[in-house]
Length: 163
Image (cartoon, rainbow, N blue to C red):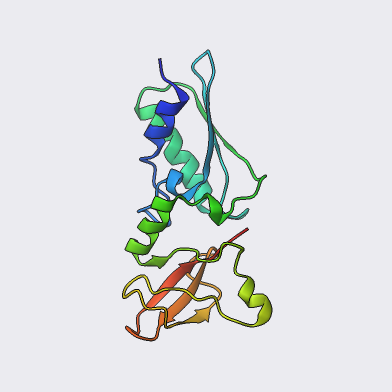
């Protein structure tokens, strides 16, 4: 008998297409798994933001993974509320982000410094220096900002804190 807990473990192998070192569990987009008595598996995911183009790929990857493992009837539902927050990133996911070269979110209350005209203090994921500066609020994807380390001079992405 397949349990919902087993399926959560199986889906830990499904990666985020934009940040492949993160599983959908690390990222916190996998919200729920239900197995009905007739064997139907229903998976619920929440996008990191409402227009996230990766969600179609994630949904397809979930279906392909479960179908390849012998599940016959799989559906993936998109849930927009409650909205995704960086609080849903796992501690392990934050470590993986930094090891990959992307600074994880640092502000427990969102990037509120911007309200007061101050930059968020973001540690360089490469050399660990806090001597960094914001280059652009817009990075390689909508959920990231672009920073530069003033010590090692390397540019890097920062995963913005979203609440």
